[in-house]
Length: 248
Ligand code: NAD
Ligand code: ZN
Image (cartoon, rainbow, N blue to C red):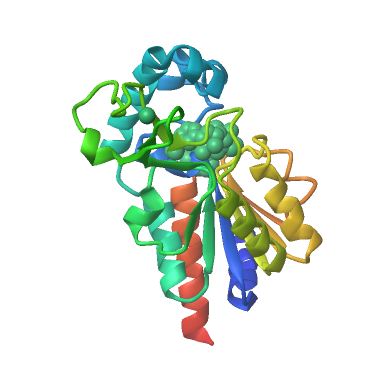
C-alpha cells in the first residue's frame, strides 16, 4: 500500500482529525512563504520588519511591507489544498484547522472551524490606546491611523508578541485530543506553534506531514510523510478517501 493510501486510512479511521497549516499551503495561491526567499520577503526581512520593536520604532516603514502583503492577500484565492481541507470538514473527517497564516484563505475556501494562531489581517488595533477597527473602515488610508493619532497595527502576531490567549488554549486542547494531525506546508521552526505536533504525538495522534521538503519533524514525529506540493497532495488524498469510503 502506498503512502497516500496509508494516510487516507488513518484519516478515515480517526474520530478527531485536525490540521496545522503554515505559509507553504498558500504558496500555490501566490503568497510566498518566509523560507524560500523570493518576492516580498527578499526586500523585507521578516525577522527585521515583522517584529513588534520595529513596528514601535518605525511603523511607517513596516507599513510599506504590510501594504505589499495586503495587495498580495487581496488578490489571492484558495488553492486545491485549502479547498480539499474544507471538503474533508464537510465530510466530517476534519474537525479543525490551526493555521499560522493570516491570509484568510481557509475561510474563503469554506472551512468553518479555523483557529488563527498568528492572528488576522482583517482587523487593525491601536497598540497605544487599544481601539480596534475593521480593515474596511480604513480602506485607502495609508498608513491607517487611530482616532488618537497613532498608526494602527494589523492584528497579526508580530515576532515578540504573545499568541492570542484563546487561540493558544483552543489549539492545545485540540492537539491533545487529536487522533490525526495533518501538518501542511510549515517548516515548524516558529515557536510556540511548532510545539503542536509534539503535543498531538505525545497524546497518541498519528502525524501526516505534507511538504515539498523534509523538515525537522519528518524523522522525529511524522508517521507518514507525503512529499510534494500541498495542492496536488491534498487533492489526491481527498480523492483516495472518497474512493475508499465508496468502496466500503
Ligand atoms: P515557512 O516559510 O517557515 O515554511 C514554509 C514551509 O512550506 C517550508 O517547509 C516549505 O518547504 C513548505 N512549502 C513551500 N511551498 C510548498 C508547497 N507548494 N506545498 C507544500 N509545502 C510547501 O512558513 P511557516 O512555518 O508557516 O512559518 C512562517 C511564519 O510566517 C508563520 O507564522 C506564517 O504563517 C507566516 N507567514 C504567513 C503567510 C500567509 O499568511 N500566507 C505567508 C508568509 C509567512
Ligand atoms: Zn489609538
